[in-house]
Image 1: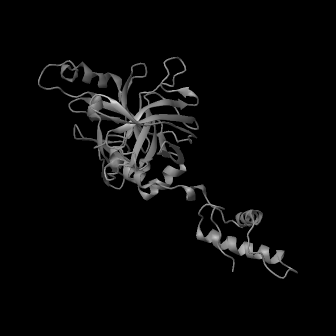
Image 2: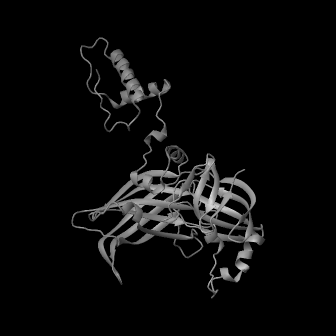
Image 3: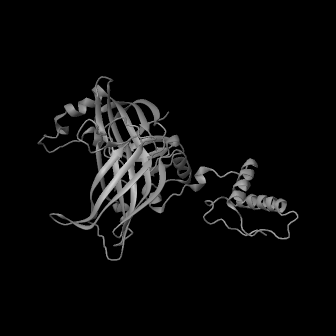
Length: 368
C-alpha cells in the first residue's frame, strides 16, 4: 500500500481524486519495478506529474473553485447563502489574496479583496508581537500609495484615478467579538460615482506606520511600510430590470424607469422632471428653516428590505450601512436622475422581486 505523502506537493483535493491518483501511481510503479527486487519508497515529483496528467485524462479534475476559501469574517460581513458563496467565487467578486508583510514586529496580511462595479475593498489582518499592543484607536498613519494600473488615487494632477472616497480604518463589525490587543481587522477601500470598471486591473497599496490616535494627535507605535500588489478579476455587468412604473416617494409620484442591480450594489433611474419636484419643494432644501425638514431623494430611496419571487422577505442590517458608498447623479440630457447605493449584505439578484424603502414605508415591484 502506498503511503499518502501529499504535503507541500499539491493543494487539498477531493477524495475521489486521491483514490484515482493512488491507483494510477500503483500501476505506474508496478510497471517501473519489473525485474527489480524492491519498490521505491520515495515518490518523485515527475511521477506525481505523470499520475496527475493521467488522472486528468480519465476525467478526474480539480475545479478552481475547490481552492477558494470563504473566511469567517467574510461570511459574517456579507452573510451569503450557500448558493451565493458558489456564484460569488465563480464571478471573482471576491478573491483570496493571502499576502503577508512583517515589519518591526507587526505582520500585516492582505486576506481578501471584494469588488463590484462601484467599489473595491481590501481586508487586512494585523498581528503584533507581545510588546506591541493595539486598541480601538489604533490605525495606520496613511496609505502612501493607492494605485490602480499605476495611477495614484490620491494624485493631484491629470494622472489621478478619480474616486468618490478612499481610506483605511479598523473594521468595527469584524473586531466586535474579537477583543484582542494583538490582532485586529482593517479595511482599505475605494468607492466611486462614475462608470469605472476595475476588472482585471492591478492594485497597489502601501500602508505606513502603525499609530495610536489620541484626543489631539497621533503617536507612532511602530515604524514601517507594508506593500501589497495584486490583480483583480473580472465582474459581470449589473442586471437591468425594466421597471417602468410609478412609486409614491412620500407624497411625490415618480416614475422608476429601471433598476440596475448586482449582489452588492443597486442604481435606480428616476424620471428627471418628476424627481426634481422633490428639490423644488422648500422643505427638502438644506437651508430650509421650518419644522418639517423633509428628505432628499437619497434618503427616500433607502432600501431596508428585499422580497424574493417565492415571497421570502430579507431584512437588511443597516447598522453598518452599505458595504460601499452611494450618490446621486442628475442627468437632465437623458431625462433621468440616478440614485446609487449598496446593500449591507449579499442579495440574490436572480430571484429579486421587490424592494422596500424604509424611510417612506413603500414597496416597489421591480419585476412583473
